[in-house]
Amino acid sequence: VNVILLGPQGSGKGTQAAELETRLGLRHIASGDLLREARELDTPLGRLVKKYYDAGELVPDDVVIELIVQEINKHLNGQGVVLDGFPRNVTQAQALDKALASNGSQIDKVVELVAPLEVVKKRLTGRLICRTCGAVYNLETKPPKVPGKCDLDGGELYQRPDDTPEAIEKRLQVWAKENEGLVNYYQSRGILYKVDANKPVEQVTQDIMTILKRDL
Ligand code: AP5
Ligand code: ZN
Image 1 (cartoon, rainbow, N blue to C red):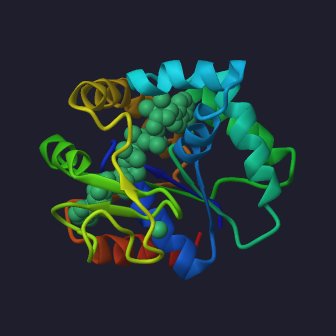
Image 2 (cartoon, rainbow, N blue to C red):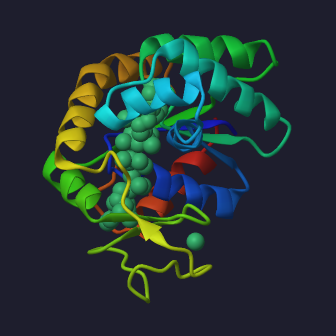
């Protein structure tokens, strides 16, 4: 199955996509991860991405679409993909459908992670990420065993450059503006499912898996 996870920043898309990758063998494709890699490049592309990314603004559609579609095409032969952070608006959703259709593929289910804004803001403030493997921690809800170090590989934990209070506000504003159109787009196709994401990680994973296992 090919799945999209929707939801505001901090609702747990990355966290849940990693679980689905481990448990169902779906390939986790995160637009944010691909853009964070691009952001490090000292090239015109890298500088363009950095400018938008650091301000919490969406990177222009044409840049993102090319980057992500390329990555998705590499992984369509496996168990399926779980998309995290893409599409972000209806333009991207249409481009995605077109790209998948040209490979005889499609999106099967879209899961929207629903959580109150106060909850997600608090989570983002405490988020830490492993520089080596990308594992996601949280000072309050998922602290590493040794402060500042990844449980899996001892890698250094860092705070994302866009997890500042200003960029968090901006990102949530952008999300609020685009989300409804995106939800309507998939709801009208009958493939949108909502999950309460204000629960422990394991419970949310179970709820998503139940939805994915139901008949298409
Ligand atoms: P991106 O990397 O996609 O980030 P985001 O949308 O800001 O989403 P987050 O990663 O903040 O949230 P998440 O839901 O994945 O939360 P997580 O699981 O980590 O995008 C970054 C930027 O890239 C954008 O601003 C834009 O500039 C650009 N970009 C990306 N995609 C783009 C696109 N398609 N088009 C244009 N531009 C694009 O969880 C958060 C925290 O909560 C963690 O600490 C975690 O441990 C904790 N947590 C998770 N679940 C739970 C739970 N159930 N209970 C308690 N704590 C939990
Ligand atoms: Zn690690």
